[in-house]
Amino acid sequence: MRRFLDILSLFKEYLVLALCILISIALLSLNDTPQIRNIRAVAVVAVGFVQDALGFIPNYFSLRNENAILRERNVSLASEVSLLRDSRLENIRLRKLLELKERSELAYVAANIVGKNRQPMRSSVTIDAGENQGVRYNMPLVTDAGLAGRIVATAGEYAIGQLLLHKDFRASVVIERERVDCILAWEGGDYLLLKNVPRTAEIRIGDVIVTSGLSTIFPPGIKVGVIASVELHQGALFKDIRVLPAVDFSRLEEVFVVLHKPDSNRIALEQRVK
Image (cartoon, rainbow, N blue to C red):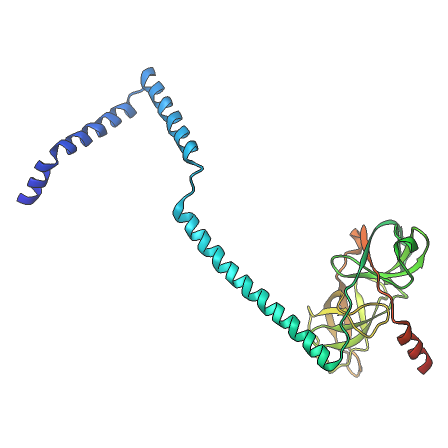
């Protein structure tokens, strides 16, 4: 207790000053005269001005934490890029060892849909890109969501595309997870159908369907849709599978034509064998 009183005696001037300041602030806050209101307004403006003037000075500790987080992310991304680069180089080396061909990069032509054929079972569109833009018969039509159809007729500045929702449309596809080859078709309604899927195949709802490398029309890997339902009837050899298209055809306004030309040598050889 004696020591505490000695400390109070040593700093009594500061304590008295602090007490006077607190009393003054309390009296100012309780006083509501016009003069005091003006003082408060000036004080608020002054404080706001100082805050704005010092606002450009960044918080050192906040920036330090942000920099640490960014450095950590940078290291993580650099590691991922390195792994992807190594995987790419390894893929090239293995393809060279196995003498496999590299898949060529695809080129696209953007086009607007200028006409739609809404005839039942024969959905098609007219686009404002044709032979003058390099569009040819049987070239695929795609959107950012996936496969939309194929070109069935061309002119100088226009072309007609047959959509997936057409009774004559067929495509060779593969179930991405199980790598099961099958044929895609449409027989009406909102869903596509998968043909020739054996009953022993482990197919799940939500499996992704993409174009296979077995078609001369469609390059491999283009998303077609996802499996919406799987049914197996007693005694049937194949499963009944419905696929929800990746493309929303009710809102289709723009498409891309994939400038993919089938290998003429392959076509000629396959026709000779047939």
